[in-house]
Image 1 (tube, rainbow, N blue to C red):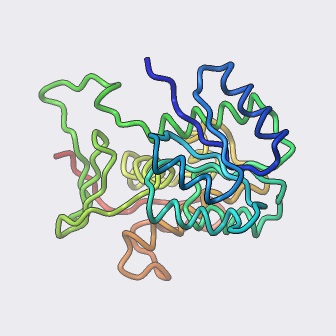
Image 2: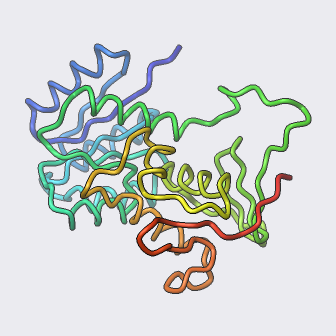
Length: 240
C-alpha cells in the first residue's frame, strides 16, 4: 500500500521536524516546505495527498497560499497555525481549507483530523464495492451528486468544484433531505465529533455551498436555516 504523502508548509523548523517524525511513524510519507516557493516546487514535482499549512509564513502568507491551492490544486488543505482568532478561522475556511487547527495542538488529534480529511477526499470506487443494481447518483432540482466520483453537476451538466469538506456536507444534506439537522449532528456525520462552542466551520461551509447551489445565496431556498435548531435541506432527492 502506497503511504499517503503529507506536505508540511511551516517555517518553524522544530515544528516541521516534530510533525515529520510523528506522521512518519504513523505510516505517512512527509515532505517539508518553509515557504510558498518551496511548496509550489514540491507540488509541481511530486504527487501530494494533503497539505498542512501554517499562516505566518515568510513572503506569501498562508491565506494567500490557501487561495492559490484552491485555484490550482484540488487536494485537501488543513491550516495549522498559532492564530486562533475566530475571524482567522472563518477566513481560512472561507478560502477553502478543509479544517483549521490551532497551535499548540495535540498530535493524536491532529493525526485523527488528517485521517478524517483524507477519508473524505478519497475516491470511493477503490474502497466500496457497489452492487450492479444499486443507484449511484442522487438528484435534486436538476443537480446531480455522484458519491462514486465525488462530483457535483449543475442543471446544465456543468461540473461544480467542491472541496472535500463541502462535498461531505452536501452529501449529508442530500441523504437527510427534509430533516432538520443541528450543527452537532452535522459535525458528527462529517467529523465524528460534536461542534465545539466556537466551532463555526459548518456555518462557513454552508455559506460556501449556498453560493454554489442557490439562485440567491442571501435568501436560500435549498439549505434553510431553522432558527435555534440548525439547517434543513428542502429539495426532493431522487436516486438515479
